[in-house]
Amino acid sequence: MFGHIRDEIVSGALAPRSRVDDARIAESLGVPRILVRESLVRLRRVGLVYDVAARRCRVAEASADDFRDAVEYLGSQVSIALRIAVPRMSAPVREFAAMLGGGVAVACLATPLSKPLIYERAFAFLDAIVEAAANPVLRVAFDRAWRDLLACSWGARLLLDAPEAAARQVRDLTRGISAGDIDAAEHAVRRMFLHEPDRSIS
Image 1 (cartoon, helix red, strand yellow):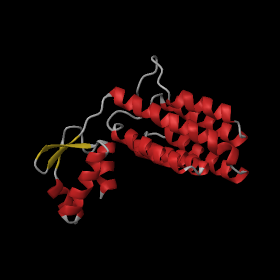
Image 2 (spheres, one colour):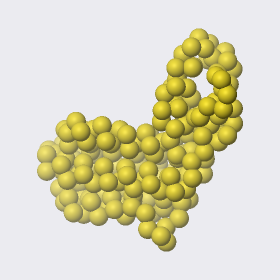
Image 3 (cartoon, rainbow, N blue to C red):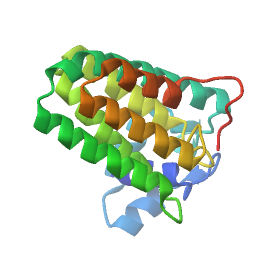
Image 4 (tube, one colour):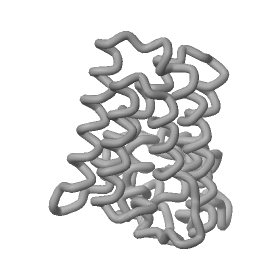
């Protein structure tokens, strides 16, 4: 239930400031209203919805600055994960990560561009890196960073760079991981995630 409503928000099907009608959602999905309400509580915690009146909520709206901050925070967690994970990765694990990274690059170049597909593949790729780090504190920080990114990424916010540039950066990251070159991988992460004044959100 939580995932369904979250996906509706992230995809733009539920637009910022639109009312979230728990009765309509429950009826359309054939589930008890209490399940929808419990999901809305979780969505409030991650900042996707906010209360406007008793038992009523609306889809939250995030600013471009919120999105940039969330992307930078996620990038810092991925950088830490790379420093820990790459030396620990066996050749098969590096190959698996490279395959997942290739999937992200392909999704970035797909026509038409599919934001849900890009985010799904990006999560699988980055999650594999964090998993290889085998650090529970990093796991918690990464999961929080990903939730924060999702909480402010709906609407037009898809990538910090043009899709072709994003695909190139992911391929560079993948090559660094495959080669066991932490510095090259981290350089690619900085280009992907760190805000620079001349970069714009597309």
